[in-house]
Structure formats: C-alpha cells, structure tokens
Length: 462
Ligand SMILES: Cc1cc2nc3c(=O)[nH]c(=O)nc-3n(C[C@H](O)[C@H](O)[C@H](O)COP(=O)(O)OP(=O)(O)OC[C@H]3O[C@@H](n4cnc5c(N)ncnc54)[C@H](O)[C@@H]3O)c2cc1C
Image 1 (cartoon, rainbow, N blue to C red):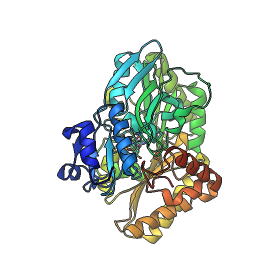
Image 2 (tube, protein in one colour):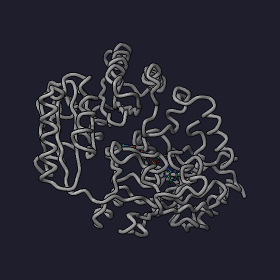
Image 3 (tube, rainbow, N blue to C red):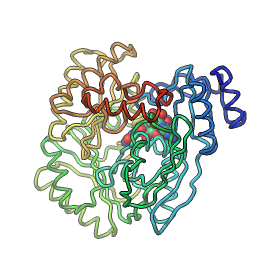
C-alpha cells in the first residue's frame, strides 16, 4: 500500500460520494478562527464504524496521517489539516440510535450535533446538560474529544461527566467498543477516559452512550452588576448556599465585553445600566417555577442588601432570558468586531482572576498601544476565563508574543493554559507551563502504546 493510491483505496471503502478532494476541500474553512480554505489531501466521510475501521487499516498500512474532524468549531487548531493529511469527517455518522427513558441514556453516533442531542432529550422530558454557543455545529465526538465544558459545568460537570460509554477506532483500525450504560462500573480500567479530552490523538470516537438528566421545569435568569471584584467570589458562594444547589450558570463579563457588544455597537438592549466593571449572568434551574422564582429573587435581594451586587434585572420570560444569553453568546459578533481575533481559554483560582486580567491587559496595551482591544469573560464559577482580543496584526511572531504574555502571567497562580478548549497545535509550545515532565512523559507513553506510528492527529498536544 502506498500513499499515492490511498485515496482510490478509500473510495473503495466509502464510495466516491464519501470522499471530497480539490475544490470541495478548499470550499471548507481551515478552522473556525481561520476561515481560509482547508488544505487536506482529501476529506473522507465514512457512514459507520466499520468504514472508519477499514479506512484506518488502509491509512495504517500506508503510514498516512489522519485528522478526525467534527463540527470544526474547536478553537485551538486541533482539526486543521496540512496538505498531506487526510481529514476524517464524522458528518455522515449523525444518527441517534436509541434513547432509554428509564435508564436516562442516549446512544448516538459521534457526528450528531450537540443541539440535536439536546432537542431529542427534551422531547423525552429529559435533558442533556452540556451547552455552549457552538451547539448547532459542534458534534458529540468533537465535544467528547475536547472534553467540552460550557455554561452549566458548575452544576453538571464537563463532557467527561456525561459519557457513560463509547466506541473508538484505534490508529491501526482496531475497534474498541466500551458502550457501557451504567453509572457505576468499576470493573477494571475505565477505558473510555483514554478518548475523552485527548483531542483525537489516541482514537477516533465513533459512537457514545451519554447520560441524560431529568428535565428541569423552572428556569430563572438574572443579569446583575458588580462594582468590586472581591464581591464576585462572595456572590458565587452566597448564591450556592441560598439557591440550595440549583445554581446552573454563573457567567462573568468584564466591562469591556459589555461595552463592546451592548453599549458601543447597540447589538443588544442593555439589561442593566452601563458603567460597571463586572456583570454576571446568573441562572438557576429547578422543579417548580413559582416557588423557585421566589427563592431566586430572595437570593438576589439578599445579595443586593449585602452590597455584593449593585443592580439586577430579572428575566420575566423566555424572550428576556434569551436576550440575556444572546449577550453572553455573542462570540461571533465579538470576533467580527475584534478582527483579526485571537481567542484564549485559561483557568486559575477565582480570587486572583481580576489581578491576572489587569496584568495581562496592561502588558498587551503597553506592547500594542494602538492595536490592542480586548474583552474578557468566562464561566468563572469553574475557574474558567476567556479572552477575545486583537492586537491589530495577523503577524505570526506578534501573535506568539500575545500568547507568551497571556500564559506567562498564569505562572504565579499555577493556572492552566487550557480550561476547556484543549491544546491542539496552538498551545503545544506552552504545555510545560501547566504539565510537568513526568505528566508529559506518561502522555507520550500512552500515545506510543496506542498509535506507535503517530498517525492520528500528529503534532497535537505535544
Ligand atoms: C462560538 C463558540 C463557542 C464555544 N464555546 C465553548 C464552550 O463554552 N466550552 C467549550 O468547551 N468549548 C467551546 N467552544 C469550542 C468548541 O465548540 C468545542 O471544543 C467543541 O467541543 C468542538 O466540537 P467540534 O465537533 O466542532 O470539534 P472539532 O473542532 O471538529 O474538533 C476538535 C478536536 O476534536 C477532534 N475530534 C473531532 N471529532 C472527533 C472524533 N469523533 N473522534 C476523535 N477526535 C475528534 C479533532 O481532531 C480536534 O482535535 C466554542 C466554540 C465556538 C466557535
């Protein structure tokens, strides 16, 4: 088998319609952050696990590198292909196989979009709790392989907590089927963990069993303003107690985020007056709307009386709630405004986040006094902070300098260079800031054991 004839051999497995080449490859963007044409040798689109396994056998024999791709909404260049790579897209593997209403599980192929799983669960009066802005395009396989987080991690955890079982194809085409449906199963190694959050470097996820939760019947949302950063963690703690475990989202926006998408551009109606350094989108979910709304209002009144918040707007219905979330989710809008945009995802202890943000912004504005414009925001209840920023330059060297500043400032806090987006190609040079040599050596040993030829997502992570 040679690389030269591998595309023909793959067509033999998936048919001509299952393989895109030339202009069809270039018609797709390289990544969400880099909309320039994709450069892969081919995009192969298997229809089932057997086809994925057959493709991997061919690629293994030929020494052909393969990059799995889902919705291509990842933000660390994890699924960006070079011209010699094959992109293996799960887009045709988009079936929901079954939903168990009693056992509260859903079994899906990896290419199902996140939103479809959420909708199917809701139809059965159940809920899939992982949620984030790219829900319409991001696929379950992509979300598992990046261990995606999102807006409700504070209550339900990340993707890892929702995966009961999965099936993956190894680099040599071996199918590992570990489709467990049980919440408790300590029979030996929990092999699915090898594929969760490992960014497609150890196997291609083809199917999964996901845990569903009972549907929640109440939803209370508020947008509040905070004038002192030390009040942010206190507010989180206070709401945790007063809402008795029903706090589901705690999304903090710095003033520059609010000003950019709400005040300056008039893209959204302001829920509270401008001019505050921090805003928090708070959501609690429970079982009885009327009672829970009373408890929610009382919790926020308590916070107002304690001076933790200085202004608050309650969403009186779905329309107002959606309008509040539209502000938090207006990442596409921000990316347009902050062109050429750079996105960051870090984590550090919540007590130090404001100091960290100030230090980063000070260094960036000193270095790029005219070009720097930035916004910060994040799922702060999970220690997770995002920056969306521009320094007005696409120059690779300058962008590298930005990364160095952002990750260097994490060191005093022993923060993580990736809270939820992963490492991909983009953060690889900085892995040593967060992981020690022994940790990286063990990661390499796992890679060597499962993919000795280094064919799956080569160069990602380390
Ligand atoms: C507007 C917006 C908002 C976002 N918000 C969040 C957020 O709140 N929280 C969060 O965690 N992320 C967020 N993201 C990042 C992104 O959506 C997630 O990382 C998502 O999980 C990626 O899914 P995907 O299907 O698009 O994966 P892709 O981008 O296609 O791939 C991501 C990585 O997973 C690998 N991969 C994809 N499918 C498979 C598979 N089947 N098997 C093995 N490996 C695979 C790829 O090789 C790549 O390394 C956001 C992105 C955008 C654009």
